[in-house]
Image (tube, rainbow, N blue to C red; front, side, top):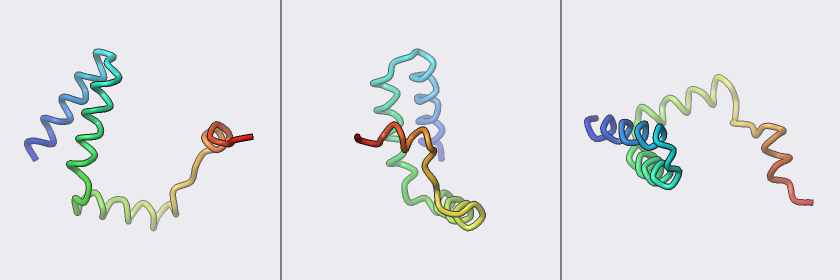
Length: 67
């Protein structure tokens, strides 16, 4: 738990200073560290059950659409 809090603090500091490269590097590391955590998986399963499958916004669909 301690390392996750340290990583969250690093992420917050990188975000505040506006360094996008550092921010993304720390975010990728953070995501890797929490991947597979039972509490995260349980929450995501609950959200899928309650809200249904994740849906992409119209904005994102239009942005990613290739003409």
